[in-house]
Image: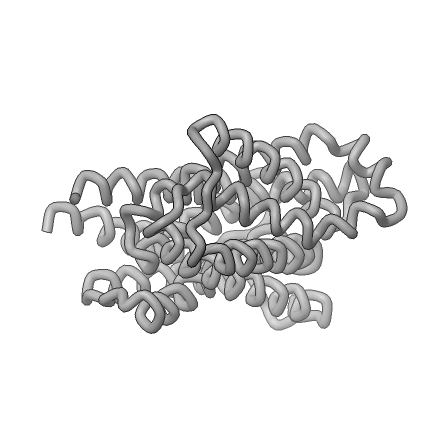
Length: 293
């Protein structure tokens, strides 16, 4: 059981690192293709849904347990909301800030919902890891900023990022419940198909064809790698990991996004940001060392 949990955490961590590249690729799409936030999310969902359904079908019949069908619809709506909020937040608040707030708020949402809905037990180790991870993410958010940065556009971006975090947290808890009866790839394929349908009307908007033509390599990367590939391994790993622990491991996403933002786009990190990164690693270390406890 311990080995399965360790593999699950490793898969979730790998998915989180992949997600951390999303903000940088989005910035490139906006700059080079003039891509809109909702268009990016919609294309990402369509590509991912097709690939996930193909993967699920290759491994056997795509079956959803009767009791999980409503969860698939809810999961799709949550994922569509996450895409709309997150990609909009990236364009308004910046790469690092959007990722940090979205994923910083998600573990708190997951911990509360998992305790209430899944009856997950919050051990002292998990609570300590959660506190370290969220504190670290908070330092990464506020460390390099001043009150001069708090424009109306920035605040709107922060609120959208917070909404993305709540939608993501709800997605994880619903997915964890459904995985007790439904195979990971089937679950991911169906709920991403729902998300694609929810966002599909965006693709009828003006200038979408030009944006896709100019940005197709980055859009394909977002759909195939950071969505289909990442959620396939994430959902597989989630079977063997508590929802709260999965939320903490996902904090590798904002850390990856921050490092890429600093390295590629000159965003500031500062001393507080360095301390924040160290706290995130400390929180993850608590989860990993639980294997030996």
